[in-house]
Image (cartoon, rainbow over all chains, first blue to last red; front, side, top):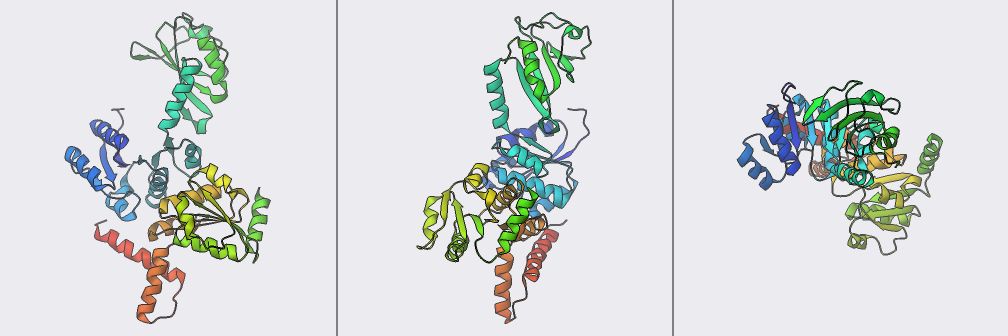
Length: 227
Length: 175
C-alpha cells in the first residue's frame, strides 16, 4: 500500500467508515478531503483532522467544484444512504471525469445495479459479513475475499487445518479445478510466492483465484467436505 | 424485450389507458395520481408513509402501495414491469434519480420521469434517457414572468435560468 504514489482522495460521508478510511489514507501519505453535510459531525471531525474536513453536501455541484473534484484520483461515497452514494459517484464520473469511483452499498441487492449504472467498485459490508457467516457455517475453510470481473472470478482464502485433505501435500500434487491459480501462501504472517513443490502446513492460508462456479470444488479439495 | 418496450411506449402515447406507477404521495404525487385516475388511467402510487395517501382525492380509484421506492421488490410489487410510465416525485432528488434508473435499467419502463429540485442535477441526468422536471426552475421562471408581465417564455429557457445561477455561485467559490 505504501508503495502507491500519493493520490487525491475525496471521501463523502464522515461516519465511522469515512472517518477511519480518512485516517488510514492520511497515514499512507495521500491527500484526503472529507465532505460531510451534517454540521455537527463535520465540526467534530474537523477538531481532530483539521481543515481537510469540509461541511458540505457532496451531491451539490457547487460543493463538488469547491472540493476540487476535477483533480481527484478517487471518489469514495460512504454515506448511509445508497441513493446518495449512487448520485455522488455518477456526478463525479460524468460531470468531473473522475476515473475511479467507489460506492458503499448498504443494501447488497444494489451492488449489481450500481455497477450497471457505471460505478467502478462497490463495497457491501452486509454482503461481506453475510458471506463470512455462510462460509463459516458451511465449512469454515474457504472464505471469499474479493470478486473480480463482475463476480465471474473470485479470490478466496483457504485455511489449512490438520484435517484438510491437502495437509502436507505439495501444491503440484493437488488436483486443482481448471483455471485455478494459487496466488500466495500466507505462513506466519509472511506472504510466500508458492511453487509446485511448496508443501502445505497446518496454519497456512492459501490465497487462490478461481472461476466462481468452481468454488465448491475447491472447497471440497481443501476441506474434504463435498458441499 | 425490445419489442415489448416498443409496444409499451406506443401504448403510452395513446390518449387513454396508460399504466403509470408514481413514487411519492406528496402534494405533486397525489395530484398527478388523482387526476390521472379520474381520467381513467391505471394508476399505482407508492409511499413509505401510509398517512400520505390521505392526500389522494376521495374518489381515487387507483392502487396504493406502502414501500421504499428504491427497492426492486417494492417496484416489482407495484407491477412496474408492465407500466408504460414511471414517475418519481419524492422529496429526495437522489431517491428520485435512483428509482427511475432502477425502473429503466431493471424493468425497462419506456418512459421514466424524475422531479429534481436541483437544476444542475436535473440537467446532468436529462439526456441519459431519463426525463427530468426541475420544479425549482419551472416555478422560478413562471413567477419571474408574472412579475415582469411577460408571456410564458418556455421550459428550456427556465432550465437555463437555474443553471446560470448555480454556475455563477460556483464561480464565486473560486474555481
